[in-house]
Length: 387
Image (tube, rainbow, N blue to C red):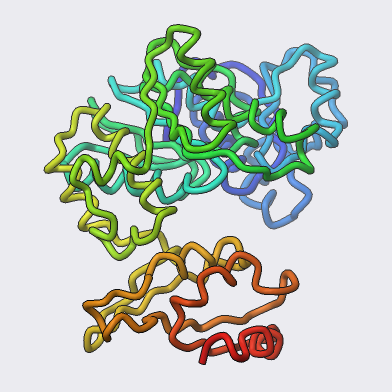
């Protein structure tokens, strides 16, 4: 657990006791802080019975508190906790900001922050894997894996690799990353923001918090290019990344089946750039890329049987997220005379009409096997287009 004497003797309110909120409450109490916690779910409150005051902070006079910690899932654009805390002059923060505040108590280390609309999780896991394979002490946290405050502090010269969602960045104010990376920006979560510009601005805050660290921007869409231009204009260290940089540096796409496809080429390009900034050489990085097995359910290589690779991509629950997998395995003249080679098990619950982006890649599909509630719908849509 990550703790800090900086929290000792202070009072904090914690709203939401799921993964990150529970870890924040535990870390604060272990640091000697007084905690008032609340969650609507009885099961979430149960571990804190008798250990701290369990009261909804909306019902409290917050005079004398140091801050209010909320989970990233709390929508500050509609939830009353924001105005309630702000009337007392209190910051509304998350567990990542607590981590930033605790850094001074940790052994010398580096922090990598990774944000973007897509590819954050894979890039974060890939950087962590490459570092681990290279013998560099590393943990990953934030929007992936175990909450960062619940993890054991790293020894000297370790690297904390953080996946950071826009919701987490909205609750973070002093995280000065040694390396901060942006994968891409496309419209998402617009129910939480006034518009796309506000969503993009949330991502850009990661770089505004940097003092001397390097910004790595995958400069392949207009919003990321605009952010890169502003960082450069401010005179801050910046590296612009292109997916083509990967091939130019000799890192062949498909080196790992778990990194097949153009979307993963982008993820790998960002990961390579991050690891270079951390001082790893290309041979070490290449070894890590080759041994990466992928995240569960995301282009996850399950096994090879008689030359057939079985891949679990069940995290792809809509057409847009399934399409990159279909695009990743194009016909190869050296395999089966260039015939389509994907056997696609598709179905589950219907989320939208039609095949969406998947329709552009059906030429790569040798046969489709439809299952679940949406099975008959997909069978009709695929009739005459694949076997």
